[in-house]
Image 1 (cartoon, rainbow over the protein chains, first blue to last red):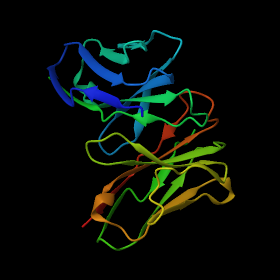
Image 2 (image 1 turned 30 degrees about the horizontal axis):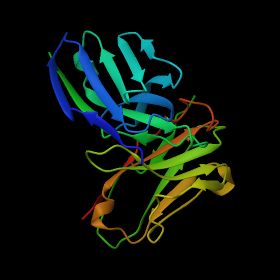
Image 3 (image 1 turned 45 degrees about the horizontal axis):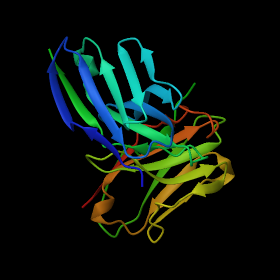
Length: 114
Length: 115
């Protein structure tokens, strides 16, 4: 059974510091891995998607890496801002699932203090 | 384009009562998902529709939960009777093609509190 773990559960950093969020999984047979952002009272917003054949994806201040052999993905947020405060979730799709089902981690709640 | 719409946004009921949630996906999206997100956990898929057919309901508690997607457009998720442990946010998502990665769009969710 695939397990998706995100540590730490919560993180507080001062503005300007770089953020490093971790996601680990037990089964390397993944199709892709996504990072989402969730704001209170709102749905999920997709940030980055990494295909299983890729090592990383970048968008602006965000960079996500994927290492299937070690079962880990990392989301880096450079020069954090108070507006980055949110919960960040990783979700993966397994190669055995043809219908696009996502399996989520529990998320890391991030607070960026001014 | 308009996003995924859900209603109501909040609902408070007593245990053993029934409740229904509504979702209208993005126009043209064939696949619709219902997720349950309990506080402090990630979303868990309850049921997935492809057009008006169910393709995955393996984690749906069928003794109390039901869902339908008539005409392959909007969908309703019902709980009857509700239990305290059903308190959660219910998220609806849609995608144009389940085979296309990264195309699940999420609605704002319905927060259910069962007292």
